[in-house]
Image (tube, rainbow, N blue to C red; front, side, top):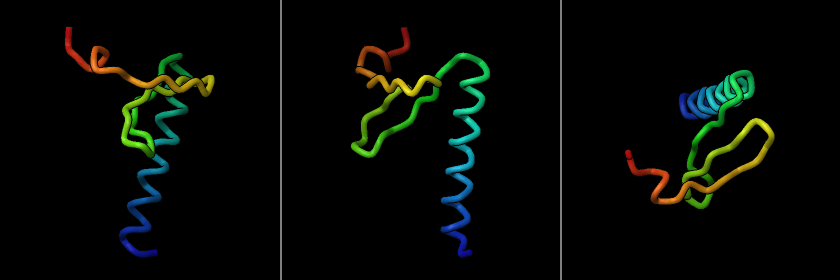
Length: 58
């Protein structure tokens, strides 16, 4: 494998591990989807877009 392929594999494995941890702890993961929008993904598979007000530190 090339370095780029190795990096892609590590990124995927990190995301998979984050999903497992979120499921075990009853939380969610946050990531940027293919369209560039930030979303929350729950262990149930529910995906909720994050709005601007959700991003603000209040």
